[in-house]
Length: 85
Length: 202
Image (cartoon, rainbow over all chains, first blue to last red):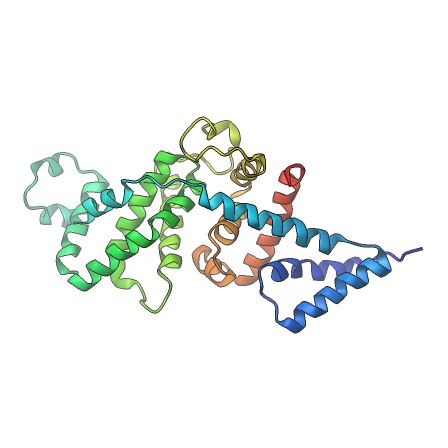
């Protein structure tokens, strides 16, 4: 029977998911976090962090795609310049 | 305001139609004269380089093309006006996005013209039938766009700046004028909410 994860520790780790996918971790922090995830999976059968990494990463990729598809009006630069000069 | 009246030299109409824009244009006109050629060139380059970023964020803030267009112009005019305050050692994109956000908030407060961020989809144009966004076949993208547009303002801002515009936490903190810790926690909650709303499509 697997143990339940400690919700206090778990909560403190939640924000690290974002640090992980936004490349805000040192190599050491990254390894520690990956070990934490592995441990959670093995001891508690918990995949919350790894699932979030996957879904948040997918969201980021989609958001980037979204940015590409916004069309900027072609005359906006000339309109701005007209008002400036 | 009286000062601007006195400095307007050649347009009687401006006295008859004292709109804020005319006052503002007067000020711009004066400032233009004192701006050196190098700064003008630099600013023009910035307009060329960043107008798409500004328009894109404006579109997500205002959620319709016309308002985004107006806000983008107004943002660059304000930036021009205060360009002398811009610290050349910092990132222009952060600075202009900060002005954009303030311009957007001012527009809501003063004109009550923009779509209120919290009103939801009922008040939005059907972007699939308009040219606000290029029509996409991909349902995931479509769902994500709608989900982002319906996020609460605080969450929408961090998602746009982080995941669409690719700004660092530090830059987001600067643009939104909030601590980095707030950016971090807000982004986390925003992503969780976004994940819930688009989950079936991912």
